[in-house]
Length: 172
Image (cartoon, rainbow, N blue to C red; front, side):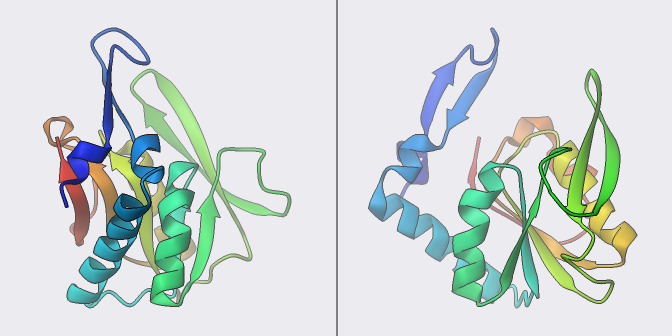
């Protein structure tokens, strides 16, 4: 299946010059959604990745991370923007193109010995994925790799990430 046919391209969103890759059309297609989750699962098994948890980045990482965790029979852990998690959190601050941002994870969500796979819908510059990996490594987790539906190759986000397996189903 060609997933690109199920991803809508929206020019000049959210600002002029940006081509937005809209996954809502993929999510709306039952066959495409099943193919996406099955493909992620298959690639994890091929790479012999055996995480204890899938870690999904807010918010579209949740959409793909939860069914992948289900398929791999492991738990799911959300990484959120500040102020969204109700219990004590670990926090990491990271740089954006124009400013900074923060990510948080519950302190009791993972332990130092846990193996994790980080999942999101898209990798662009790699900043959020790198910050998530840094946060998990700071806690002492072993990051096994990354899984994305879409990779914007020209933005070279892979270069930001640790030298670990990176799954991407569609490249632009």
